[in-house]
Image 1: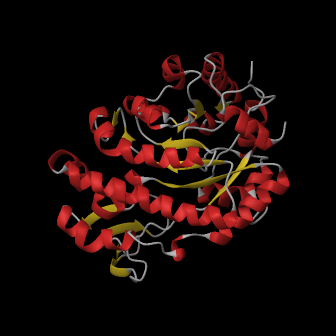
Image 2: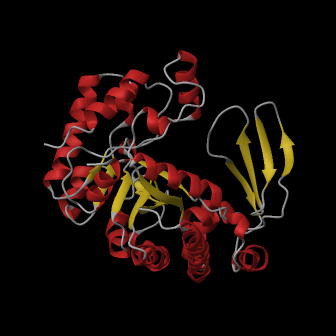
Length: 358
């Protein structure tokens, strides 16, 4: 089987000769490997580790594309910026990380309707990375790899505008406002995807990023998800299915209580399943085996320990119950690859992990 055939078979819960695989490195990890000479400067990591799919197409969801980011404060370590979403965010200058949410212009419905929503109602070709999509799609085709459109969905589009706290308070105090944001972003995304796909062709599957949980809990109750967010997800997932594309959904954090709603919305594959947040893939497969595929849930801390026997136990204890449940599985850790993972460990993880089929 080719990489593409394996990916599509797994997404359809069908058997494969070996597991498809994918993962991403932190910039610091790449820097370490390049310094050690085990990865050439600028070398393609997808080809280096023989991963199974490439991605492209991430839309620019910033509300005001004509706004020039303003630096409001700068220290040796951080920089505070005002963005085109009206958000004040403090970023680290010398390392990767999530920015500190300092303040937001949008805290309630009136500011959303006045400053953000009008920017999202019309197609703007500047939001679409045509060349990125085109080149990665063509490269995947030549190599026999699968290709996915990847990007964010409404939850990840809303919080850069109003922050998690105002968004979650809105769910409780003004749910119709948040429903409007969800629906607006779903329509916005479909409008731009439709243009991209009409001009550059369809991907093999679609990958949505939606970090909807933290440790031991999702950001919202299942009832809130089903009432407020799920309709937007259903609209996006239905659109993907209308194009013949399976839908993979990424979420960090503990989102197990939201999985029934995601499945009802049309999710075909759950990706990431962060172990330290409480996610356990075999437990979820007991309920949804054969109904969805799975990607991830291999504890990245096991790889950081660089102990192959421990990694082998982790792989077999997580993957085999999922395959026995009737679901497909795509090899991935529960997070991206930090610099503590040795290159030979990561190489072995891919080489051995893809053979765990029985």
